Amino acid sequence: MTIDPVVTAERKLADLPPTPAVWCSGLRKRYRKQTAVDDVSFTVGRGEVLGLLGPNGAGKTSVIKILLGLVRPDAGEVLLLGRPGTDPQARTRVGYLPELFRYQPWLSAAEVLALHVRLAGAAVPAREQRESLALVGLADRAGDRVGGFSKGMQQRLGLAVALVARPELVLLDEPTSALDPIGRADVRDLLLSLKERRVAVLLNSHLIGEVERVCDRVVILDKGRVAASGTLAELLGQRELRLRLDEVSPPAEARLAAAGHLTRSGDSYTVTLPADQSATMVPDLVAELVHLGVRVHAVEPARISLEERLLDILRAGTGGDHR
Amino acid sequence: MIARTVLTLAVLTLQEALRRRVLRSLVVMTAVLLSLSAWGFYRLDSEFGTLTTGEARIAASTVLNLVMFGLSLIAALGTAFLAGPTLAGEIESGIALAVMTRPVRRSAVLLGKWLGLVAFGSGFVVVAGLGQLLIVRITVGYWPPQPATGLALLAAQTTVLLTLGLLLSTVISPMASGIVAVGLFGATWIAGVVGMVGEAFGNEGMAGVGTVSRMLLPTDGLWRGAMHAFQHPALSQFPAFEDSPFLSVAPLTATYLAWAALWVAVVLGLAALAFQRRDL
Image (cartoon, rainbow over all chains, first blue to last red; front, side):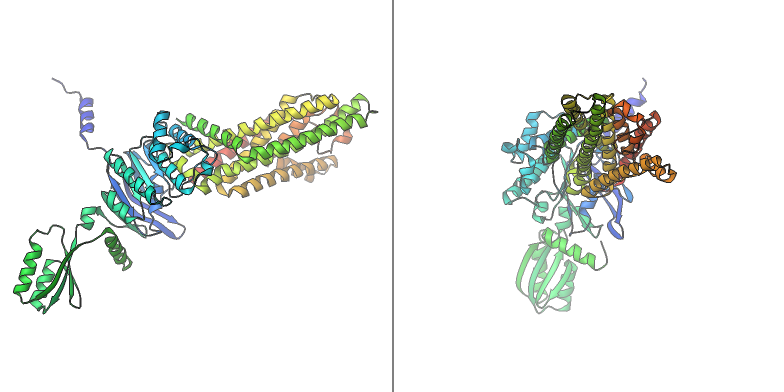
């Protein structure tokens, strides 16, 4: 029996895990003397929702523009859905909502969608295009000229444009910047439905709550560099234990320090606990402290929010060390 | 794939030209010029009733070139101010961002826009020019010797200018690109007149100015070719008319036409290169 080498090669290829939705490595970009992006690398898996966080001017929009080929990086490589970013075909199944969203004011909303479907080379029937408009709440404005749309409506249209050509990867740059609270909730639902349909999403947003609720993983950029990255569990897995104590002897303090990173101000002690703590750890610690003669006034477990964690990372970054 | 992008963008650009205010102002300006000229030609015919038929034709042919110059100026202004915003304006406003992230090559987008603009500019020149020729025919009974060639050369002149406008708009702001393009257009025309005066007085230096400017920006040369196609053949026999800016003694050479085509291709290529390298 002979084995066809082509068939085995194909089978081997098919057995390989699918290429990530985004893969980028060593991205660098300088604008004159200003370094906007400095050695940024990360991946977004298929069907994964990645949040891009960071202060203003951290380079988030520049990174997104480099990924999409709008900006030429000085160094680094990009693969979108397995194809090199320099090949326009890599963007066939990619949707994008720019931070600066403007659409041809002389076209109607439906015509803008039809234009993007044609440019994407996708065969999306008119009914499905109307559904995209309905999804963002513009069903009854399909025939109106975009020139008469408010900012919020243009951003909704932008979302429809990003989603209309059946993308496998969607890049959203501040998708809720012009939306009212209802619009923001709509976008959150939209993101969750994309996640369900295994569409990969790269989300740049200032609204940390938004990111915390929908993202699987987060990349934090600061001054053009990756300051931290990981799953939400990795970044937020840490818990704190706030204690108010009296008569803390040196052995008791050593016991506290052994439980986790210890900070003290007056009689309040804060212990940052590792992510993999056991369920009995807190009662054990309190029992031992009592045994060591410590008087325990209050014990309060707390969870670190993404916001606190982000501020921590960024403040640590200003101290000089980025990781 | 590339052909589809080019075609889609060409149609989009035409649609933009038809729906924006540029078209309305073009229509108004053209209507004013055409009706003024209709009135003028009508007066020419009744006031100068004593002219012989030949004299009347020569007069009509001279005035026709003058009006056609006005028409080419409108076409130049219209397309230059359309070519600028269509690229630079879209980059500035952000409209380009969503379009350029589709699986399209930037050069294909540029070519599509150029094609749309050429179709629009040529369409305008042909419709308005033909209207003017018909007015002259009805009022004074003059019909130019080569109307099709003349209109084609006018369309070519518009194409040259809008290609320049497109190149400029890839590097400078939308308004500035329109102004610079129209300014260069005017400067070449004046340089052309200087060149003619130089030729008439046998001053080689001055004549050289016209020749060089006609090579650098072929609008004036093409315009002279168009004039030659519109004017009465008898006119070039009068040496007295030689230095008139609204008459042309000789038709265009094939070499010059080839140069103009090459010029358009090179400038369009440069525009594609500049656009390709630009960060959006």
